[in-house]
Image (cartoon, rainbow, N blue to C red; front, side):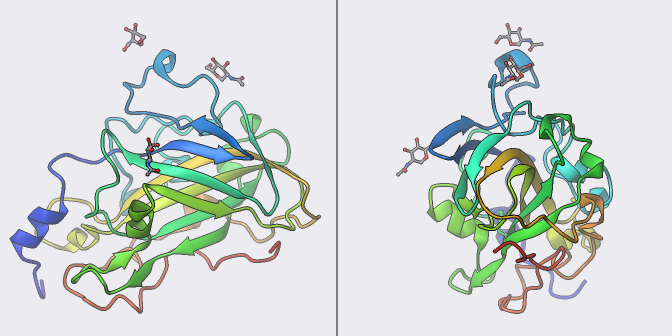
Length: 264
Ligand SMILES: *[C@@H]1O[C@H](CO)[C@@H](O)[C@H](O)[C@H]1NC(C)=O
Ligand SMILES: *[C@@H]1O[C@H](CO)[C@@H](O)[C@H](O)[C@H]1NC(C)=O
Ligand SMILES: *[C@@H]1O[C@H](CO)[C@@H](O)[C@H](O)[C@H]1NC(C)=O
């Protein structure tokens, strides 16, 4: 392996335990909803009763990896199951989420891009089959600048600086109806290890689906969407890279399809 990262650097970047990322709060249309907390022991009775966040069972397993890129769980996380409500939001308005990791804020070391996808449910999202959803990417942000030594300052660092919060604008001309927002962090701190001496499995995917009821807006239907199991291959340049030894990520190539701007 060329340019192995120093162990010291690695020690500062890799948490002692496997991480369990989640969206802890969702704001839409002036309402605050609790997120789905799979870390709260996978026990329905201790979970929020009404949330547009899709249910997951990723408490024990942590993130998904490149080897999961084409599996059903990449769609809406491990054990992903339909939320039973859709949060109303006006087309053109922002949905805001707060990321959280088990019992702490998102760890600084988990640098990486943040991506948002939308799929029309063609009816009520609580009844939709997730593997039939066709997602378009509506927003993405990756490497921001080189202000952090070696790893760089990424979208996740911007989110941390904003108290864990991230906003996603719903396209203003989107046709009204129910949609699944698939919001995702891809942490790259150990992305390179799929070919390195460490036994971790590369990039870490943290998807979370949220059901939305889009109101107002225009008449533009999402077009050209794809099954989330085909968004990533797993070994593309935006997923297999060493952010610790390549100081300039200005040429970072975002994984997934190009952003769809058809309803902007
Ligand atoms: C689920 O949560 C309830 C309420 O907190 C608790 O009484 C129960 O023991 C929990 N069940 C399991 C299997 O953890
Ligand atoms: C959603 O499901 C939970 C758990 O089954 C239930 O307690 C809650 O009432 C449901 N919420 C709505 C809005 O249907
Ligand atoms: C940061 O988020 C937490 C969790 O929602 C909240 O309690 C706290 O007030 C927020 N801090 C600021 C400065 O907004």
